[in-house]
Image (cartoon, rainbow, N blue to C red; front, side, top):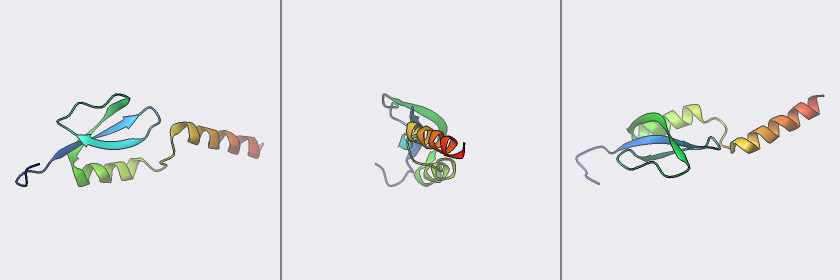
Length: 73
């Protein structure tokens, strides 16, 4: 890692709608997809903070929603 340049990262997302950052110059790992956002580390972390409001995996969120619907009946 060079001190005279800022590393660029991309936002990646998996099938459970969990987000992470990954070096933009590396291939996206298996099981993850490019979320079409890249930039300096702080910028992509801020982006994730704004869009990823519930860090629970997707299947857990769906179970919670189902339980809430059942409770509200």
